[in-house]
Amino acid sequence: MGMAGLSSTMWTSGPGRRQNNQKGGSGMKGRYGIKISQNIIRALLLIILTSMVAFALMKASPVDPLQANVGQAALGSMSQEQIGKLREYWGVGTSPVRQYLSWAADFATGDMGTSLLYRQPVKNVIAVKLSNSLFLMVIAWIISGVLGFALGAIAGMNEGRWIDKGIKGYCLLISSTPAFWLALLLLVVFGVWLRVLPIGMSVPIGVEASGVTFTDRVYHAILPAVTLSITGVSNIALHTREKMIDIMDSDFILFALARGESGFKLFWRHGLRNVLLPALTLHFASISEIIGGSVLVEQVFSYPGIGQAAVAAGLGSDMPLLMAITIVTALFVFGGNMTANILYGLVDPRIRRGGAS
Image (cartoon, rainbow, N blue to C red; front, side):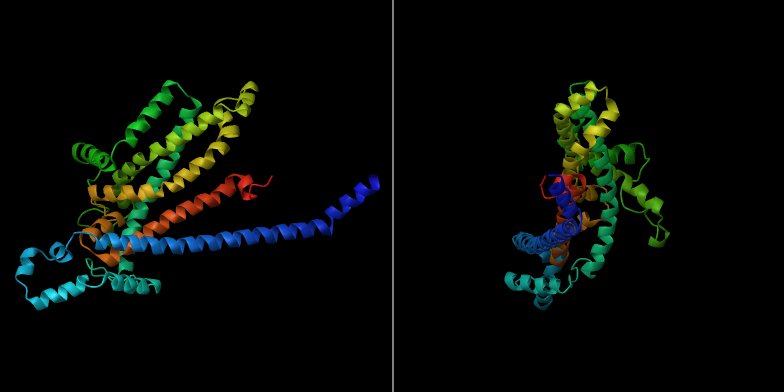
């Protein structure tokens, strides 16, 4: 047994082991390559389906682009030739299939078209609007994630106590409160009554772009960011609370309590890793909620972001701009979900190994 075991050990620890490692490495690279290819295919399908649905909904809209952007009185004073040119400019009377295929062909080559409302390339409009919205949404996303996770963990570790009831009641109240109503409430309190924060806009009124500082942008983003953060806290906090309660009822937590561990030490050693995985997944999935909430919040605070541009494009029948905004936001949501899948493997080694023990 000794010689056989020794020779077996020597064989597995020598070239054979290196060969197995090389096979394992190549297999892992192959799996990652397949996953990347699958994600690319999914992204392409997402763009196609999203664009088709958005285009169909826009064509089904009862809004007349001529009356919405020119006005009935102005149309009445125009000649038929002028009206015909306007109809051609806004795409009225053009075959929907032909219009979609023409747009898709241009978009595939990187040409997003020209905004009918702003009379600028759609790329330029989205670059400006998206930069404003990203500044706002990233702040709100980080605050809501950290605060929601902390509140949920605290409530879960103190189930049934007054702090748990307070956090749970707060989250249920916020989750049932519309984002625009909360935005109006904060606007009235801090912008009108107390006058400690600006009532809207992303920069001070009357100041040129070159004169706007980073402090000015942060100052004007406080109310919109706080509104989005408050509305995004409840789901993460409630979900983390339920997961933390399940962990606190487990056998390994009972064993840790028997060894004298408690409080933050107990959470750090045994609770954090187990509750972080579902919280990360939910938080990255909440990107869609942040984007949807920003549409209402930007309208209330007159914040010139991607949400306000989407509303203007929808009401004004600006098809190139609305289609581009729809695809860009869909890709952000897809990227958030894909990032959550990647973080799965970083947090949980079992998933990184493909579930093999």
